[in-house]
Amino acid sequence: MTAVPTDSAEKPAVADAGVRSVTRVIDLLELFDAAHPTRSLKELVEGTKLPKTTVVRLVATMCARSVLTSRADGSYSLGPEMLRWVRLAGRTWAPPEEVVDIMRQLSADTGETVNLYIRQGLSRVVVAQCESTATVRSVIPLGVPYPLWAGAAGKILLLAAPELIDDVAADSPHGPEFADQLREKVEDGRERGYQLVHGERELGSSGLSFPLVDSHGTVVAALTLGGPTGRFTEDRTPHYIECTRAAAEEISAIGLPGLD
Image (cartoon, rainbow, N blue to C red; front, side):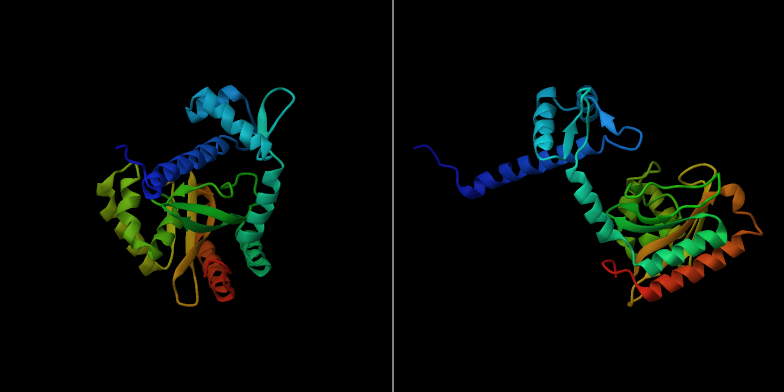
């Protein structure tokens, strides 16, 4: 007698296939960036390391849904459907206008770029930014994940998730043994009230970060000042700290809807 598979036996396989397809679509979309607004089919195949037939099928489906669009030269770019998602994401993550005003003022007072970071898993992501007007400046792309183990903002965000420190350390190039050192740095920042780092993520770049807290005192985001290390001098840094602390306190008092 042949056994007939039950619905419960089939679902994991179907679910796994669905998750795999979604992952492949995301991997494909991540190949497009400011430096590569268009991609050829060959580049998509090489970038995803998927069989050409699979990429052709994915691209055809994405073009049919306007997530991608084909161009006259045979290349592909993000499609018009992405405009709707971008606008929606912008409205969802945009801080209140009074918070943006505070960030602008902080940038004007210090001459540096101001970023608002949140934590996503083991990464930190900029969701709002006021860019410095200086010729040489630090600019972090919006929405791009960066590791929590490096930089001032990551250690601030870990104040609300100390249970992740072992995983963050294991994910770093320093390995699991880095956990104790990272935990110590996070705690030092808790006692000091801020994090100031030089050249951790990128040589010649410095960051100063303060926590943004909700009404319960829980860290929900990080307000970070970033710029060339050469401008974070002994005479300037105290001014940077004072201005950023004041801005963080103002923003925490206003709140960040959707985060707190």
